[in-house]
Length: 365
Ligand SMILES: [Mn+2]
Image 1 (cartoon, rainbow, N blue to C red):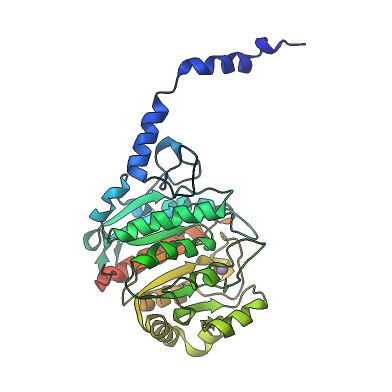
Image 2: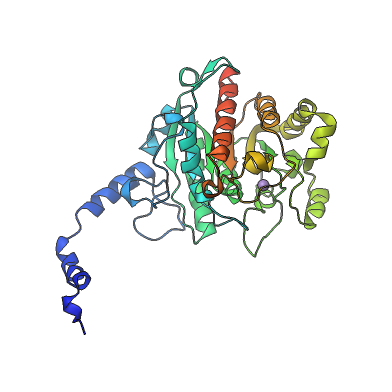
């Protein structure tokens, strides 16, 4: 039998204590200084609100969106108009996971796209001061603590007068993102939610998962379901959905409705409902609203969704008046093919930014 002390790993284990620990305190101090202290519910050392340096989880992004500047110190975010941030989180998925790699996938795909867009006649780099502030430090084993991190991180960016563009992550993250923004809006918020799924159950598998975010978001004090418009609905759905729709006052628009009335009329109706009595509107785009053939890289794809040009036209029309934030969720690179889904998400965000720049319609704080 080999003696324990003759094993290389055991001999090395004995040596580890002699190395000391000089780099960790320095790195951690810098990470906290630049990435903010974590949400109050988190007690372990080494966790920050925004993931920074080598102390980050392994799955956080290493590139920036559209190769824009990285805002390493979150306190400098007020130097910019718009901040892209990632939420690498997929513990809220009920079927296929992988959206924790969504932010990295979208950023990588975005590097193929030019900031100049002839459809809009806009050079984004000239018109908008855009940065990437990195990823929220998520905790895959605990949704509530992750949600606290998201609320703090998104809220901080918005409180600095900056419009957040949020790369998901699964759709459960929209609730804590809105919870971060809502307290800083002096009035009501409307939501334009583009998705094949309605996502308004109170609870899913005993937790707040990615089919529950609208139930909880519409319980925020200044976000009423009467200002929530859902466009593209028609995929998997629980029967409890109809009860919530009737009771809450939300407006659901199906793919059949889009076929009947056309994108322009649908957009006009959505704007009217979302903005009624509101100071700001948030856009939440679940990439699975696209016809499954165009978005293989998502957890719950469905046939019969929007065609790419329908989605781009809808986004162009509904972002015209200005928005307080946007998320693009449910991109799951492990299921993607040739980066199609990540590329679709990137194109949607870039066109929305172009539209905001063109109309000078960023939310005014
Ligand atoms: Mn969906």
